[in-house]
Picture (tube, rainbow, N blue to C red):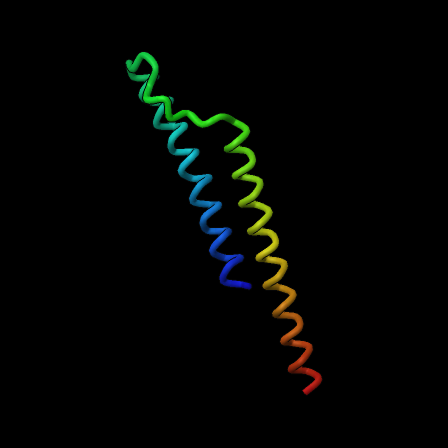
Length: 79
């Protein structure tokens, strides 16, 4: 379960980074003389959804990790 959560978080973060880099690349090509760029510019909705998904997965992974640590500490104290 934890491995799947961390893998999903990493893939979502990678997707967000790729969308951001594609946007920046297309913007720089257009800025420095390209008429239309390469058409790599993602729409704002896909980038926003990817960013929110990454943030939500990272937050959930952090909460889950803290909960597991506190349960381990509680088990160690009771043993």
